[in-house]
Image 1: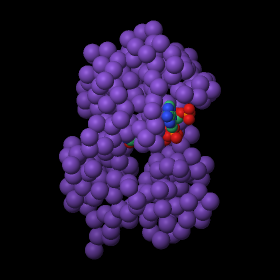
Image 2: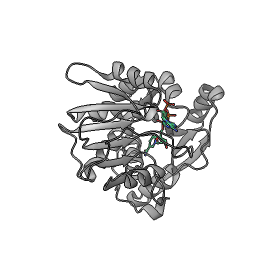
Image 3: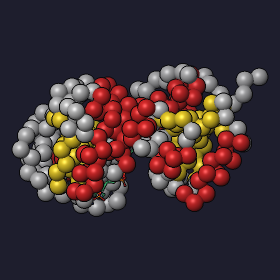
Image 4: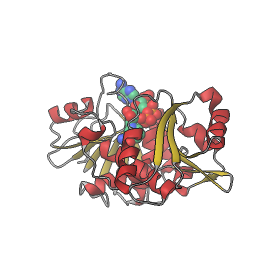
Length: 271
Ligand code: NDP
């Protein structure tokens, strides 16, 4: 009899994670026997709890806040992308080694492609300089944009990211949020957590034009606070991060099951 593949997402808090629903839809569509749970793990117990999950037969794990960097330090074998990001969101065992990948950046780029948003030779502005900004930069750079500008409330963090990722022709420009933009961005990506924290967000001026694609990594059934703000400031082409969430999940699912799920899921089936 075919064994059930045990999968889970770990994080803290974890009860609101949409991953169990998304992975169940993938498994159903492909007719695979998969269980996918949401398991709370605290930072202080990370290593013991993780080993215990693998010992109990979990085959693959997604990792979310605040454990992505810890999982990076714990892994024995890192993908090239996760080495660049310094964090991971996907773990699995191979010959008793803990392997890790970061699928967030590739998930975002896939979703942008699904939306026919070109990245090559484009002006990209990233708002925020936290974990998710670092996770998406390597994939964005691979798509050969003209320039990435990174605006953050704490400018020192934007400068650090710029130093970490700038090399050769790939130069990342750090700017404060109070900046007035001197060019026309093709794509603005919000990676700040201001919306989920229910806080106001100061933005650089001259950020949105009629043809600026505006992408929020956060998602909700209605417009996110950032997308509402962007709409009021003139952004016409607006998208939330649900597509990225689904695409990064599909990449993890494929790593574990070697099968590619359909990603054109309905928003109402997930949120
Ligand atoms: P971090 O905590 O690592 O970073 C948060 C960033 O937001 C920092 O740059 C911080 O600035 C900035 N910020 C927070 N509050 C404000 C504010 N009031 N005004 C201006 N800037 C602010 O979070 P992550 O990068 O890990 O996650 C950010 C968001 O991305 C989350 O909402 C998460 O849900 C979403 N996300 C979505 C994914 C998807 O698949 N769609 C995947 C991953 C994340 P400062 O440095 O000054 O503190």
